[in-house]
Length: 114
Image (tube, rainbow, N blue to C red; front, side, top):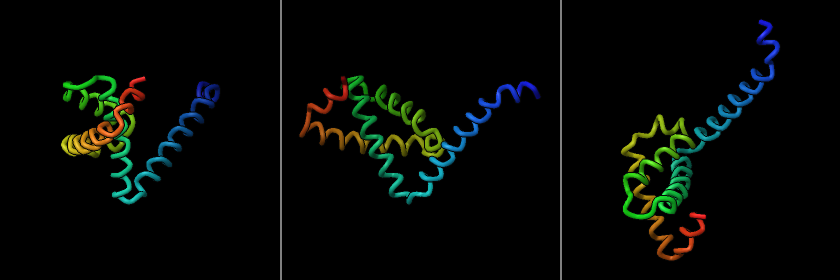
């Protein structure tokens, strides 16, 4: 009991972190699913560009793995819900969009790599 009293600040910190996570999750899941999907697509586009800048071309599986790891770390609640096949399809869509962006603005990849 004394240990709990002496470390009250750890308990308060943990409760604050849990409260922030719950508020974020509630806000995210309260959005319409189309809006959620659009938010994920925007995040995926950024992640795919970062992976491309980091690993270069001809490393598709490695980039997919890196992108999935980023997804798990950034959105663990969604990673538990979204099947890998769906994630792969969304990544493919983000790749197509990335190719369009890079065709018009190849300097984007260089800026991200820095």
